[in-house]
Length: 160
Image (tube, rainbow, N blue to C red; front, side):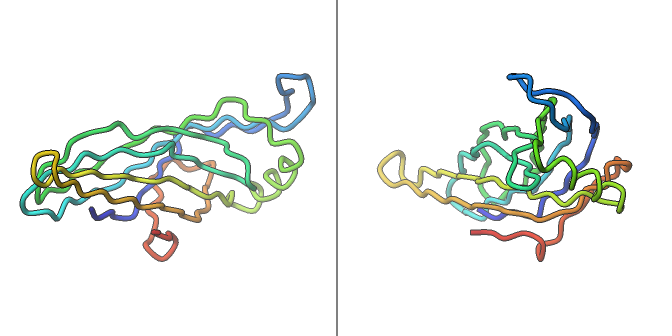
């Protein structure tokens, strides 16, 4: 299974004051975005079943948006572009909120995109199975005032 570097599009980015569930005042962040990536199945004899763990967008070790790739089957020798929608609604930032306001004024918000993609291929029926996992971690800077797709470079992502 091969992966091409993802791209991220920010649809909504709202930052303001609020209170968490327990009533503690904090800076709050609402974020909606989508992550698109291309998955390639190089196998010549079998298709693969592709799934993932939750896709997390993090700011300062706080998960601000999360989403999931839908499971699907990918035929042999094929490319497919998949999209995951990430949502975070009124996420409390606690102490990290002040630094978010400063980085927003400087033109961008540093974030980290972390997810794992798994594939499973049945080579000979269910007798022989091929399994692969890729953990992807990408560092990026989001411009909250732009909704253009942010193309991530392979150099900004780590594939384990």
